[in-house]
Length: 454
Image (cartoon, rainbow, N blue to C red; front, top):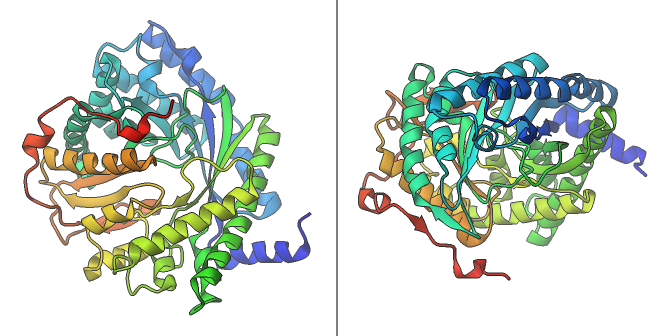
């Protein structure tokens, strides 16, 4: 039973500490929309999304009104489109028609993003996969709501370095296609290793082939709540610190579980998972970096940062799994630069570098996220950054990702404004030494020895 004290605490977290349900994401399988006729495929995709998601936004608004819990985003994820369009799409332009259909369907039902313009190529690319990847710059420049992701590696298969090389070029091309908007197309493109099938957060969400026909996944976020809780134990030992984070994560997850179950009941769609990720926003007091500072660091990036982030991530997961039987997705701490005021401050102070962020990704939930770099960065350098991050995920049997933005016309020290939840970012320095010969080898980096579990 939930007692009155818990209700009071939850109200306080919502009103004063930026607690919110960051997203209700409806996953929809489009496998039954595939076929050889592109026009028919597009029609089926539009009809299914608008039918299944017809009441998603209204349901989110209803739950928000009834329970007083802010639900920031209502979103859709779909089956990786390289699978859905394989029989019908013969050119990159064919895939772009599907992207436009997804965008139109998302607009019709009123969601802010739709994810799943994706390919899964951790071992090798099919002809269809390659066509979709080649279409990404056009697709993201001609749509408003479509998000794209490519999974290029896994612990079981290794890393497809051909795809890694291609994506360095694609990211630069996407930056060029959207240069009039500070290369914002790259903010809607994520490169993954070990991508989960049930991630509700954009831009990396897709509806995995292991999922059912439709599912409700909820992403909860509360960095402000965690920071406020830690203020009450300032100076205490690590045992007290950990207990405080666990208890707070438990309470936050309970809110997500409630919203997920209500949405599932109203929509008559199965509940999937609660993703408890400390996902920051540009709002003051809603920062993961500020939690690290409260733990005892002058800035994120100072010595001890990786240890503090590892502690935070682990305690968040431990608290979350006690509150819900189905914690999934990514669940932990996000460290996007542009979306976290504390991270921005740390970069501008010189405390946080790209190399330190890479080290931090070894122990957090995602990877190099929303990082602006000079627009003249080479494609092979971007591929090298991706390869490094994929290797961390592969070896450590965890999800890692890269969402990096080479901003055309900008250089180190410039500031880029993305707006809304995407915030703003200082352009960060990138190691200028060449990795051309490494990237140009081609082929696949094999899976690590500990991948053999059978």
